[in-house]
Image (cartoon, rainbow, N blue to C red; front, side, top):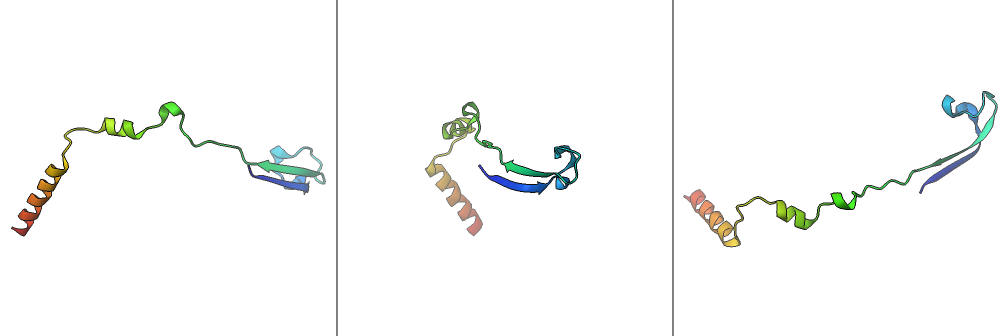
Length: 79
C-alpha cells in the first residue's frame, strides 16, 4: 500500500470540502493512502482452458486434414 504524509500543510490549499475549519491560516497533517483493489475475477467467473476447449464449435480438423488443405491450396496457387 502506498502512503503519502504531509505535515504542517496549509489548510487553505485543500479543496473546500476537505478543510477542517474556516480558519485560512490553519495547518494540518494530510495522509493519502491508496486503496487495495483486486483485479481478480471471483472463482465462479474465471474461465479455464477446459472451458475454452468445451466452447469450441465443430468441425474439428485433424492435422492430416489441415496439411491436405494446405497442399491443395499451394497446388492451386502454382497452377
